[in-house]
Image (tube, rainbow, N blue to C red):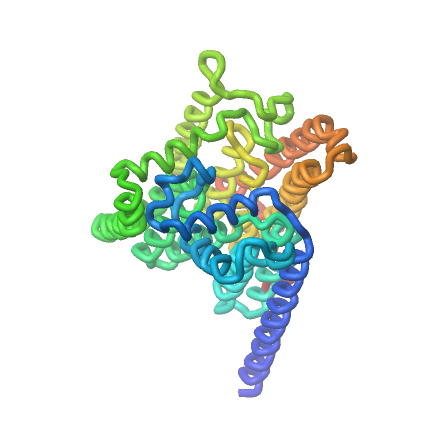
Amino acid sequence: MQSALNKKNTDKKYIDLFFITLLFGTLLRLAIGIGYYNPQDTLWYKAWAMELNNGFFSIYSRAESVNLDYPPIYLFFLKITGGIYSIIGENVHNYTEMFLMKMWPILGDIICAVALFYVFKKQSPKTGLIVSALWMFNPTVIFNCAFWGQTDSIMCLLLLVSFVALERERPIFACVLFALAGMTKYQCLFFTPLFLTELFVKYRVSKLLKGIGAAALTVAAVFLPFMIGSKNPFLFLDVYLKGQGTYPYCTLNAYNVYGLFGLNWKEDTVGFPSLYSLSFVLIVLLIGFMIFAYIYAKRKSVWVMGFIFMNTLFMFMTRMHERYQFVVLIFILMAAIVHKNRGFFYCFAAMSVMTLVNQAIPMFSWRSENSFFDAYYGNLFVIFSALNLILYFVSAYLCIRFMFKKDDAENKEIIKEATV
């Protein structure tokens, strides 16, 4: 009786600590987000928000005039932002402008931390607190939403919850969430082969078809009003195909193999076969590896597979932006905690540093001409691309060893701080 009471009090202590860290993390993001003025990308969001006041569902008929290159889900949030601008006026103070542009990314980031807490709360409130804090106070996560005002944490949130739902035998809910993720950021579509394979392996045909049907209905419900409003029955294809072809370059400030060879902003469609064509060969090979792993791996993990799948695409596929590696953080963090693997935890820490550098150097270079970052940008690009390639091979080795080696003592190591 006393033991149960002590456990209850201890659990309550960690729940209270979680809400305190959540408050501090939120205030930190708001202080940085409002105080640091960044026009890069955020002013595009403002332009979209203002244009939505001229017709919400018809926005894609005017997409070229405002350089709209996002799927439709984020537009629902920007519609609220546009409504606020219509009340207070377009010419607002920089602090107000940054708050309006960054409030949705910050909110998505906070909800992602909350989701991580509740994913592990049943196992242990202490574990939930630690995992949530690792996200809440991660410098690269803070930089992404508060300094830059990007929406990558919203994508991470939807992917996290959809794959957790898939693992916890809620396939229809998982499929709906994954469909929403795919309509939030193009990158989510890279996880489609993994999601479908997991769905096919774990569930009966009836549930599989219901899940896919629910996802299809979700996509139709979101896209149909925009199709009607823009008078374009092929809007779905236009949005995704044009989005893929917007930036036909080997790498767009992404520290990967193309950055190592100085191919930043170099066209990827030249030559035969072109590097762009070879990227599709890479996707086929990765899908083949994934199927092989599902058949022969001794340990099967959607988190490990999601990490290695997307990280490989980032390192070797063309048209990768500097932030496209960000999403692997949620997968390697989940892999580290779910499998209690110290090596994965170190990968999470190293990837956090690398993604922070890959975001910060390009953005600071854009913001301040003739700076150190601007003067040595090419050299830094090659150096960090090389370091990221080394990190890739180390992390890939750890993932493959985890999946295929039966008795690995290191895989049994526990991150003591994340367990009771």
